[in-house]
Image (cartoon, rainbow, N blue to C red; front, side, top):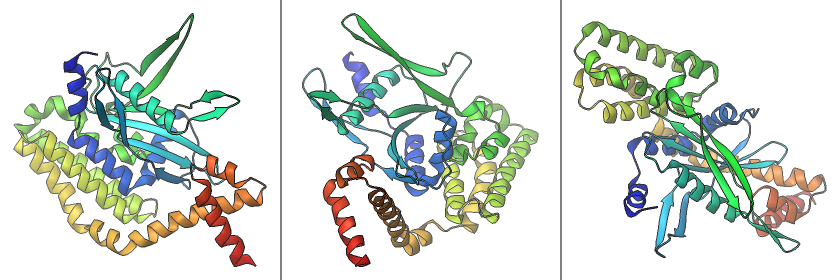
Length: 327
């Protein structure tokens, strides 16, 4: 890799990456249907989503220490206590470095869970995927990486999800709500035309009124938390403001709709302040239940720690408290 490519990789960070990370941090339940869509899994949404360390450090070929920040490095823990690690990246523009970045990220993530068995180092790569906000007819359906070792080679693909391939109805049908803030990208090539055409502006406004209404219905039916509703509207606004800043009419029509919903459901700060403790305690309680259940089924503290990506000390502390309270 030449110097310009490495510099490009070091500076990659957009408001859209930040939106993706914010959603994952504030509304982790949204990533579960996305993982189902990408990998053909059948998670129910009742799994525990654990965000792992997303800063990765390594030395480049010149010997200098570098830092990479992944968009997501997470673990899903099923109700049966089975854990699986995933790595997702949100990419706004193809830059020719994606395969290299995914390889670097995944290799470092794999080393975090390295294991020696009978003198052999075992590393397990996460299930990885890329979400493309921009795509065209020539955009591939997967990134391809081939590893050559002596006379053998291993080629594998990293799936690509193209946001523009999904209609509004499909996003809601599959509960891919995490992609709603990026829906505006499908109109990017038409911004100039829409901005000067009142009929098209009205059509765009109506579409976003429909989005707001559909989100509201999900919220009213209990399928979506009010906080999640507010976060999706607010982050949709943020993406629009960044993407269409040169087209004031387009920006005005969309932000008036989504901004109004943000005001009506201005719950983020209130919800975080009032429920952060409860959320944290709820997640802790879920992990305690998983540890206790696996122990009751005969798993050793060492195996439980490995399965749930915890330290043995943490497992033993939980078991000490739960068994002590039962005596």
